[in-house]
Image 1 (tube, each protein chain N blue to C red):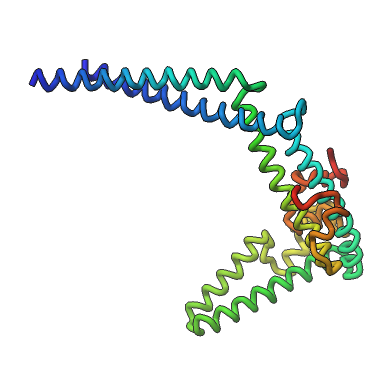
Image 2 (cartoon, chains in turn red, yellow):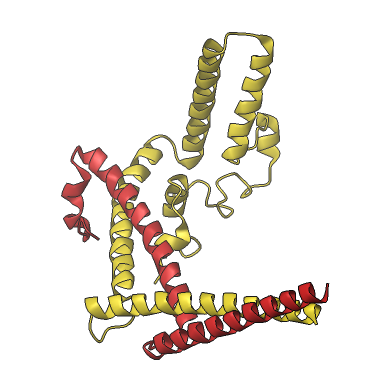
Length: 90
Length: 185
């Protein structure tokens, strides 16, 4: 019984040691990446996602409205992009 | 001692999760900053996205103005927004009736289906936030509380906000101020 307990303890100790090592490696890598950043990481990612949503929303609106005009004029929507100041790749 | 080691293990696993999440965020941020620099050396992060948003907002407003010119004339020829709203409601009723008839043909004409059809039509009203009122109730309803959501006295004027809302365009996203009736920056 004591032998079993000893085995359990050593296995847990090994596991914890491995965890500590991985935490240290991850933090070192985090340090390395963070040094390259000009702005706080979380703020950059949050702002980027917000802008992406805003871009997707307004592009959908623009394509919808221009699409209605294209239909009204009987032309393809792509022919109107330039007139409305946007490119096919925008 | 085992209990203590288990507690330590849980704490270490929590710290590892947090460290991994922070690393993932940092790597995402680095990718965003690098891409921004690649596109526009010396510029702000996400300059490209901000520029694209500006382009599409301008295009959307220009298109909205053109559509508004056309639609307003048509609505005014129909007798103004109230008449136009009535016509829309009738179209939905006609459309609702048409769907119900189609359904009945598809599923055979048993009674239970008829009830489902009615429930569905009521859902359409709910969905478009149009109260199924009687003519009488509608006339007593306080002015300005009509389903156009316009301010008192504005119900007879077809506004850009009314058109945009009808087209399911979010006034905030396109940047339109309903009170001042103009584009905002």
